[in-house]
Image 1: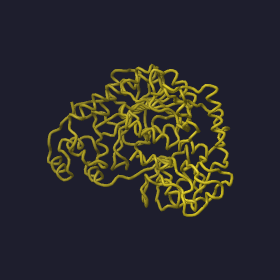
Image 2: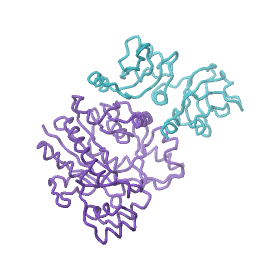
Image 3: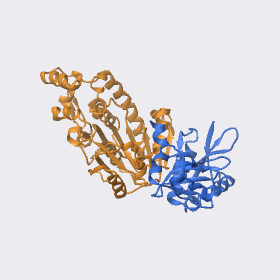
Image 4: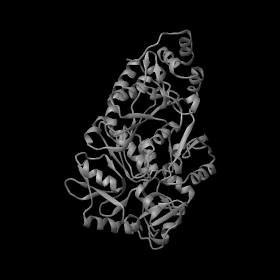
Length: 179
Length: 319
């Protein structure tokens, strides 16, 4: 079981740090966030973006646990793992940094079917990326289409004939899950 | 009780020609204009519409992208809605769809939301909300501000709705998995309430031809009774001077005008306001005479308005 609540100051600091990694701290600093916590372990599981009115409503109808709330932007485990909806907001309103990579048009369709990313599909990636880094995968229109994890560092990400980024989540998920 | 009308030569012949149960056609002859055109239209694939999600893109940008992929789109009476005249790809599988730039939604369904006259910052209740097409349009009209409480009793449908909200980037909504009649127990009043009531779905026969013979007068009775309970609960949740929009995708007067008429009889502070689109609501059916205000309600007919069949009533609740 889990429950929703407002983050404590410490929790908000932890979330802000995570948002800063994606260049999205500024966008979120005045926004309302709520968290879903595990009932037993009392740890934050999911972070939600909500409006102020939703926060107020939750206080008023606290006897009813919502099925879902606002927009889940990420899971806070050992590391903050953005959801696709979160990645979309970060890409749209955040400052692009080394943790964003861009793939070509052909690869876009494959990624949207959940496929991993081949080196030759990557058209832009920072040399400063390390192995095992979480990245947001953009298409050529700078829209977030997936969240992935690098298998190589720096220039090795571009190597041909090998999967160099593992796709963790992609925007095609909505269709596959619904269907 | 659902009104069963006497058989006629015309009702027997049309029901045989188009494969309907006769009781249904004899009723259509009473309340659907130009029944032959209507039945013929229901045999054709309905026009597909998409609604631009302005939370994520602009109409111009979406049109540019889809046109470059070979889509043919046509403007409609609603600025946010486009008719898909040609689709070289599955409309529900494009990158733009997956990224939430549009929602596949019938024009009639968008007109229901339009009737709510929603403005940013309001508090809105959406009863029987899944799969979320109307909810996401409301969020769009509110520019993701204020709050929407979306009520859906079914887990699977609530989950599907949460995907649609996420895809469309909606963050002003909370989904409550509960029975719609429980809304009275929230102890809250809303600026706007939408009750798109579960119904016998006569209006979507073109999409689901099995309904020509699968539903019975008892189904209409069942829906009508449930709708009367739901509309009472929904009306009691509206703030003074707020708006309740009642809609169904059925043509049956027992599910539409009769439901609203009973509400008007019970509450003197409710008026039916005019709506821009569609044909007038009925003020009589068989022996039944409805409040004259029902003229302001709207009926959308596939053969006249190129939409799925819909009934929409906008009800203003005064203090």
